[in-house]
Image 1 (tube, helix red, strand yellow):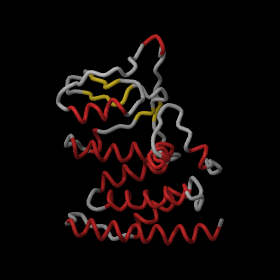
Image 2 (spheres, rainbow, N blue to C red):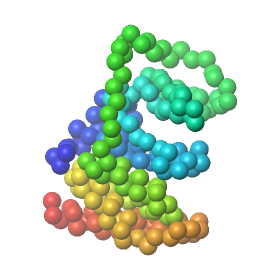
Image 3 (cartoon, rainbow, N blue to C red):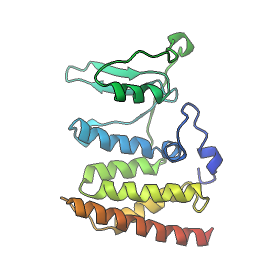
Length: 203
């Protein structure tokens, strides 16, 4: 992973997305951000949220209920459908998008998410569990680190290193105000940029 290039990281096998989101997908930071979103959107505890790697990108989410039954949201990997649903909610608007055919996907596979190898996912879980202003700090540092990677200023694994050190250096506030979020975001971006300058010198 240390030698992954920008062009390699931008080649997502299933989705066509913008550069920033594609890099987040390659580091699994996108799943970390989605964990944090799920916590707040559905009033969940961190222990109730699990990330599963699904190479075919057909199942987008699964909810397990108290009786053990599950419901999965499935569809072809194309952002047009969820965008249309968001715009038409709560209605289902008709579309001529391609339809899913189970015979084209006879096998759906699943793997455990490795939070040690994909350090960004582990950092996102840490931020979600600790709460306060830490998710804001993590997000700001990630945005700066990804931008630097796309400019070829840092390596693939250095992104997580920059995010982690920024999370350690910005003061933690358990119950932040809006101003605290703003100042924490600005401080995180400044520290991340400083770390990137030092990393670029090493390269």
